[in-house]
Length: 373
Image 1: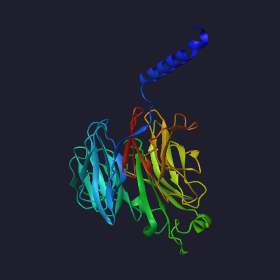
Image 2 (image 1 turned 180 degrees about the horizontal axis):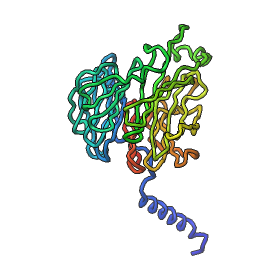
Image 3 (image 1 turned 60 degrees about the vertical axis):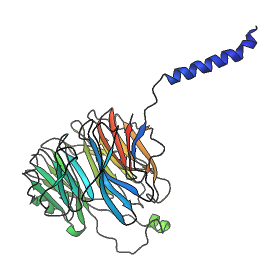
Image 4 (image 1 turned 90 degrees about the vertical axis):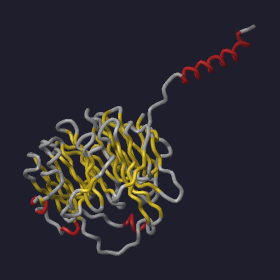
């Protein structure tokens, strides 16, 4: 037999060997679906996701069917291998966990506490104002932020609250003001962010109905608020500045690194941008922005690795229809690498919950929970 006649056999053996080698290798990592609410005539809108430990996690939201909404939580006790859908009594707004067991849930009607990672909830006494988020530095001392330029503090685990006077200091009508985010770098250093956004005077149709008008509508700056503490919330320093967009997220990493997110209106040239800041000096700089990437959440890992999650912008008017979920990662806040995401993940917004570089979860407002594996 000549070498020429052996070529097809050699080629076939090489192909078989290549396939066998590939079968022996683990699949490439990507964001894979762990849970998906897929029911006819209803959708699950997830509004927050938390993993207080490597095994315990929960997402909260509401099942929407027409004009009816059913508050629910999706919980896991084995790192997402299995998920259970459980009912809630009130529509959730946000979550905060101090440790693996102790957590709080803000709802549209009040504040709830769990001591079993979301398996049980008990309602706490009524809050003095409409709150959207809480944060605790220990099991007794915490803060709540919300509408009408209000911030409250508690020293008994949420049984009673009193107003933080510094929150009212920035200018602007309280009726159009909100503090929407609160985060602590450590038990003493924390920040609260918000904004004042008066209504526009001109009447106009929804953006999706009149896209040309939406794109031509001139964006205007407005007041952005911040409150900062260096003594665990005993005192707060208030500040305000005029800028475009709203600071919607602040994450703290290894000292002194911080990462912030600014989201813009549909008429602005960028959907959002991420910026780094030094929380000792306050200096900041933009680290990422792209006309085709609407960032909705950010994260900083314990080692300083940064993550950006959001959706691809398909047209001139953003968020008209769900689009492909996208996640970027960077080790130096300079070079960003796209992470592979399951093609079925489409949404308006995505949320991150990251414990370390091997335990990463993400939820979408379309009822999907994914893990990077």
